Length: 167
Image (cartoon, rainbow, N blue to C red; front, top):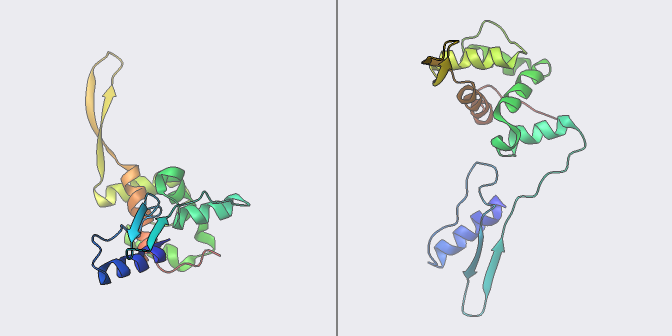
């Protein structure tokens, strides 16, 4: 779909037909494109792009797709980040860079510990209400694990943690 939209954008620029269609590195960015593009008085190019739900045979394949091609919030950023910690046996070079980038002591399969350490390292916190036993409310700063998971996944996708072959 991205290649189709890129070709259409080049054609639209050459024919001076107006604004380019949205394209980007995020999964599903072209799924809302539904438009008629007038190529000439006779020809109208009808484009309807979309993203189909993937059909996976097993969890491993589904997690590989989630890591690379599915919108993060559909699977859960913490689940995808957890999968990154699970694949450490196959990708030794990846985890050396992962530990170095986030100043961790060693690789760990406990995703909550990893995300907490990443959040502390990046200075990502969230403010939450804590209710005491007597009914008082206090605001507490806690490490933001969702922001840490987001950064961890983005760093992997950008190649900052090394090149990894998932298959």
